[in-house]
Length: 576
Image 1 (cartoon, rainbow, N blue to C red):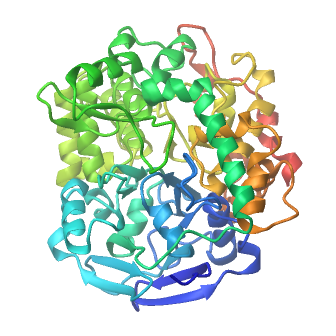
Image 2: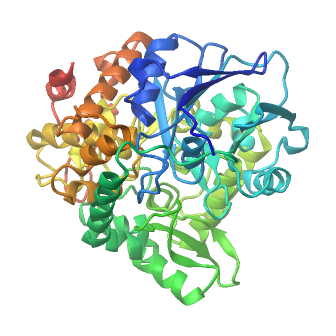
């Protein structure tokens, strides 16, 4: 095999042309979320229509992707969000990032929009470049039916990114699914409506065929090997890794319950009476007692040692959904007063199949329940509304466009969203540092941009939250730029002597990597994101939680969100 120098691949969806270009100098030391921000500022008019010809859909692996570093082979997808109107990056596990790194694709930039309606499969390979095939037989199909058809046609060694009916209908809660190591299209770059952007480009699926590719070259293979070993040992030995291996992200249910921070009844309470029934402990009990194909510890990426994912099967021995995550349990379970993991899992499968973000849909259903469109605690009623989404009815399209759209339609004030995007399953009046993150991140309310639940602060004290949020936001933007899972942070943080610096130096031969490289990458990334949003028209008034959260107290602790606007307005002063 010959060495393939990293390149930018540009695909024009109007002309169906592919151009392969050298990586510009200012893009070479960025990947993932940071590179998306750089490209968006350099090339996209921030005032453009997110579903129009001016927006770009960007796929880029992180800087350390391609070497099966545990939890560090993620793909970032980005563009201007139809949900928030600002910059958006969403990342996922699965095969896509790894295959792109093997193909030497530093970034795939999808431009323009087709002249005619219709959908295509875009096949990318080193041998043939870009091949376009009509996707007429796939239109309207869910992702679980689409992926096997593509694998049968293109072979089971490829990576696939695809959209479901939600993306085809340009719904603002649509994400982009990626197949995992088991060939299941379960790894979704979920947030911000990027599936609608992919739909606007006329793409049902992108197939990445890495035949003839190879691992990215290492400047110092021996030093990289030593650093990789140190990092892997830190991950495996970290107590949090053990917790997530056993209980997955659902372990958070009991923790947030203790903080009165689990979303209940459309974010009107912070504790759930029957939390034991939807906890990580109960999920593990089900997966162990029900037996195969259930799996309590499942890896979403090859080589992951944490294995926080799961395969959730029913009593009948058939898979209900994989994975069932805490965020879905929170937004589509407790937020709707539903206390059955089986019920949540069934609903989760349908939302996945539609290619939608379960956080946004769960938030939309909570507002719908507030409006009287479904009974609280009713799986049947919730499923009927999900069926409306699949049918593309007027109500279904309102729901598919997210919670803010539902709130506006039905006159509901209690909409748990910032910049148009639903909050994750961490109540910001009880964990106020995360509330600061929700308010100030350029990405819209998103826990993966800076969760503070483990910060050593009094979470109810509004004066202690600024540094906790800022530190977490910078670190997370750094992790998203190197391609690391949020849980990889346990290993990176626990490894002495700057293992991220050592990995980057031995991977690329960079001699001037700063000691605090994650924070440095985070500062650059967030500065670029804020610049894009400023150009798009965002002001400090957009960096706020909903006003009702400053008035309505969480009943369990009497707390409102009372971090001062001065803190919110000046949190990033040191990086700009």
